[in-house]
Image (cartoon, rainbow, N blue to C red; front, side, top):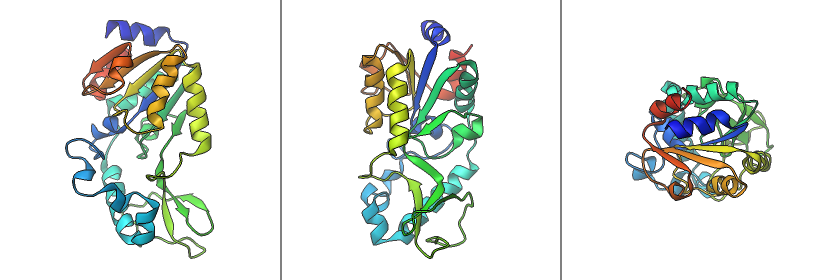
Length: 236
């Protein structure tokens, strides 16, 4: 911890990559691991374009349930520590795989969302996108002003990441002096490519996770434990 704290303090440019683990500490269910949503549903039943085309109401019932859970969740001390880290660093970017918006609610502003935003909806007919934070939604599936079906503005399995978000994340990873990887399984690609990319470009790599991941062997330092406990200590 002492060495990691010094590396973080001395780094002029920092990129943070977060995954579902940090939000799980706020009570947001994950897709993987014990208690994950996939224990009850198969991914292909819920989070693919094909599933939405087959049964948009089922998909929206699931997302409406998730949105209600997220609405009740609160940012934890890990989220708040990353917002504080942003305030301390002139060159900083937070890249998240999470769609829940907890980073922004904690005060983070320089955020790139690789997998979209669960509080945005996009029309499958006219392409219009808008923010809708109602939970629950009054109508399932919701409809656009044009009459077309709205879908969650998130990245589903089989869909590419938003090009602009990926280019920002990739460029930041290549130029970072230090990358902090928090609460990610390192199994979801292409997001899992970012840490090896940063490491290959010369960045130090610090991992914060409850358990070992494929990134652990690549990391300069792996801290085992909860983000809400370890991240505030890193900033001391």
